[in-house]
Length: 151
Ligand SMILES: [Zn+2]
Image (cartoon, rainbow, N blue to C red; front, side, top):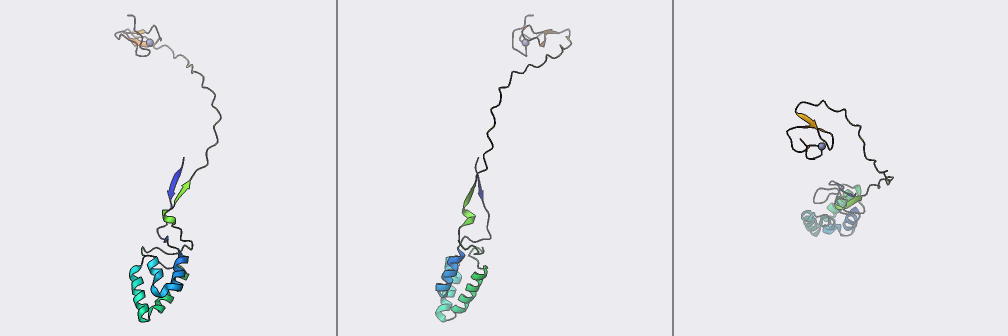
């Protein structure tokens, strides 16, 4: 039996913190790290600020935020994983250990139930000749064994 468990890590971004940090280091002035995590809007804004000469401030702040592990992607998830493995979508196969093999069960001997004490025979009842069950006299076949009753 195999159970597939989807680990919910909705608060952790599948984006790599390492990639975001490197992008911010080398291309931060162009907002590359923001494009990387899907924040293209603020990435463009950062790019425009850089063209005006103000982008480096934002870039430094973003660098600090990434280093501090508080950088978030476009979904608001924290880019905290250094390897960036998308854990939220990776199914983890959980295979429980197989139970120890059962020893072969000895064949169950046919149950010989002790015969119940013969019920009190009523006036309109009779015993089946085949199985000995108490049956109504007005039935044609025994309701226990199905044998035709000899009236
Ligand atoms: Zn019978």
